[in-house]
Image (cartoon, rainbow, N blue to C red; front, top):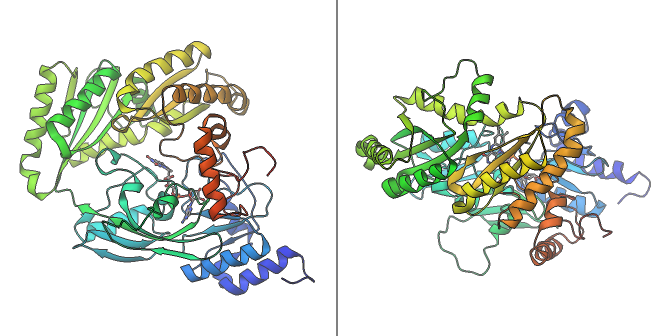
Amino acid sequence: MSTSKRPDAAFLEEAQALLGTRGLTCDADLVTPWLTDWRGRYTGQALALASPANVQELAALVQLCGRYGVPIVPQGGNSGMSGGATPDASGTALLVSLRRMNAIRAVDPAERTATCEAGVVLQVLHEAAEAKRLRFPLSLGGKGSATVGGLIATNAGGTQVLRHGSMRALVLGLEAVLPDGRIYDALTPLKKDNRGFDLKQLFIGSEGTLGIVTAATLRLVPQVAERTVIWAGMPTIQAARALLLHCDAALGDALEGFEVLPQSSLEAVLDLLPDARAPLAGPHAWHALIEVVADVAGAANLRAAAETMLASAFEAGLVEDATIAANETQAEAFWNLRESVAPAERAKGPAVQHDISVPVAAMPDFLDMAVTTIKAEFPGVHALGFGHLGDGNIHFHVIAPPGSQRSEWEAATGKAISRRVHDLVTQWGGSISAEHGIGQLKVDELERLGDPVALSLLRQVKAALDPRGLLNPGKLVTLAPHGARP
Ligand code: FAD
């Protein structure tokens, strides 16, 4: 390390020599857009923005950061929900974007796998799989920007987890740069491998705190030959759960998605999208969006199977009303209603959102209890849950009383509400982060409510891989208890 120059300047000079002008920039116009998360909740500062072109460049860069003690914040599409990809305000960290490493190395129809680099955008992966008459069975609202590396780092979920699982279930092999600059190469399509711990799983859901994912081999499934999309209305969330069990028994593996929303959320969406129409004639306390799919072999019988399931659901009194999308356009319109719930709720004013899970069977009663408790303890708020009932994962939103001032309400009442919601979730044996990760958003809450043994294990793993705490500091897990002196 040069002694005649300021350490930052010497570091940047060496990084520039390593990455070239395309690979490193301090230009504020280029760096600033990536310093704030997409929801505008967090803004940080960075020494520079690095965009390595390949795994070797990244490995050398990580070694250089190690020599200078420069912290690293990995970033993909910056579509995360928990501020995990935003650096802190100190300006000492290097923001490392994986977006330039965006090659799809292979799509193998025989093995049904895709091997791609971390910067591949989810939508692009979908298209590459479709070109080979296959599909990658994970989708979410941010698919136009979320990258494979970010999806892996957050163990993302979405609307197809019910049938195909989250990223954990879809990653067969993985390549990552470790905090000391070594390359962990486990890019294998092996379906069975019992050589000890499943090390790749350490990096899935680690939010960039243990290594930087550079590539992955992912599981693909056959393309959907036909789908049937159903919209059903029910009087209670318990009835929605009964319908889910009924669908599961009647349709088995064909059941791909089961999402719920309350009437108030549907109305919020209809307010937001003036051209949208409610699928059913009358109001219902709860609505379910059900997707049933078939590959080529089962396509002929799909609609008949869905109709039979629905007829028996009516007979059993499980639904008040229901309709099957008449065509693809209507199916898309149904999904658009569901995907617009979050923006529609956000448009209603200041709110706090919670991405929570409890055991699937307990979710209906939990939801009723949580809505009643929060409304009683925080008068004037509107509390609601919507989302992935089939996974026991609900997005629980609490909207401020009309006229509330955003920043004031969110900092005081909103924070108290979130603590209360997380207390309730923990009492019910649930998780304060079902699919969005911990990031910087929930690092205090994980510390407050996490099982002490689990927290100490998280810390031990972090210390083993990243003893100097240079990878994504302040996110998910810190070497010393958060808030304590290291
Ligand atoms: P970023 O936001 O850039 O980073 C997220 C985290 O991963 C950070 O901690 C970052 O440091 C780390 N990271 C990024 N790349 C790497 C890498 N290569 N190696 C190591 N660490 C890395 N998520 C769901 O789970 N379910 C949903 O239904 C869902 N719906 C969404 C809807 C919308 C409209 C939007 C905008 C987002 C939604 N998300 C959802 C959240 C988001 O898309 C996921 O969290 C996604 O996985 C983040 O990918 P990214 O590339 O944008 O990562």
